[in-house]
Image (cartoon, rainbow, N blue to C red; front, side):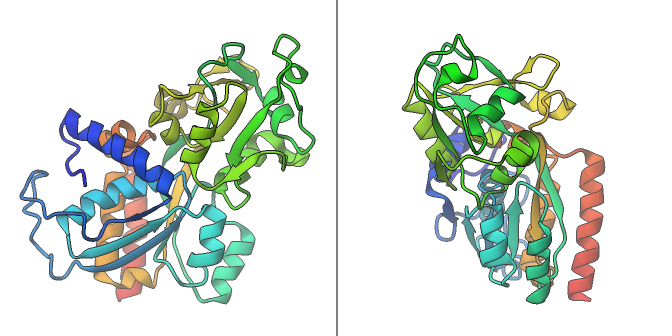
Length: 336
């Protein structure tokens, strides 16, 4: 698999790799990584005997590309690790894997919910919340949809609410009288939850759409239909900029296009959001998992990887320091 992100060509390779694995929804890196010979400044050998073992991760499809990219580099440095990363949706990961004690991390595109906290508590699963990056949740249409470049938040709600507009001209008079074909996140997804919170609120989310946990399926659906619309994490638009058109969102001060810059500045409202990963404290008692968690937090400020390769806004140095202290406290608790 791709290794260093120090060169432009390596970044291109990784972007192609991420676009491919995004559609698969699960990543097993064991057996397809090789030990580094020092290309990233390390010898790739120190601690290999100690830093080994399985690492099981489920959860958010939005965090999936970032977690996969970080794990790719980690597994190259420590070929003894055996990672298994699945894209199950934030809620699907919490309910079906993490809070039942079956995974070491759960990725999430929104904070853990009270019912999930209760399930984890019932099963004795303790955890910490770590900030991974900032996302610009992106609304996309087909590039041939030249009738629309932006939508207001009210128009977006008309398209996605529980009793939605059926044709584009119901949203805006000058839009064509063509059926709206919707592709979006399944109801086990944190992106689905966040979209309701930010756009739909009490109006609820329509069931009249093609729901999936695989964001690349959304990208493919919209790319193949001139009257389609979809939404997902910015990284998936970042991987498909020529196949999709990202819409500007008007929250009252004029349309703002999603980008790393507008998400970072806070200008892209209300669809900028933090992304998380939740390590199990019990799992942090295992040295290879603790070491990967440290590595992940270290990489959250890596602009080449987080922004350049994946397409999210890196954490600030201050946030990284806070997250690392929280992590070290949890590791001490687990291993003390």
